[in-house]
Length: 155
Image 1 (cartoon, helix red, strand yellow):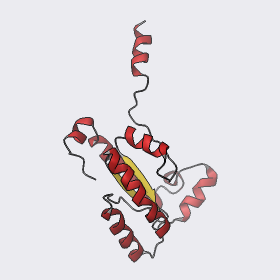
Image 2 (cartoon, rainbow, N blue to C red):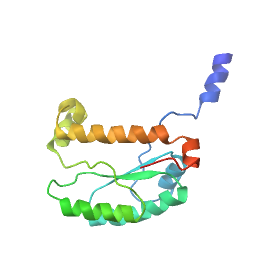
Image 3 (cartoon, rainbow, N blue to C red):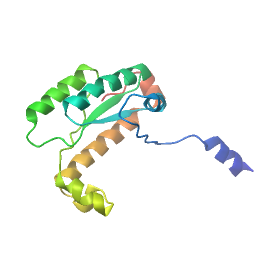
Image 4 (cartoon, one colour):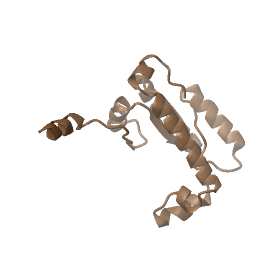
């Protein structure tokens, strides 16, 4: 009986849950933000996507959760575009994270059902994904209820 009670107590408790919501700040995104310890917001560095970030930033602020933006499919020669995109997301209170560039490794790994770290483990895409993973895991370690309450989370 102890095991059954133990399982019932554990139901609904997770060490990590990743929820992928639609890009619009709708009810699903709001529910996910309220349940989150940390929000990771993917965004292409384009005017259309950056405009949508403003709504997402309002949602995150109302949920009072730490969050950061990951620029993905960033063109290689888009230094000025990325600087402008960084300024926009920082201006709405969302710090940027490591940048994921447009890389052929993503297109090559997708049909194989594998990650870029499996297909090209020493490639640039794998390095970027590893940097993002390390940043995310580092943040999750400090996203305890006590740390959030004491404002110790640094993004």
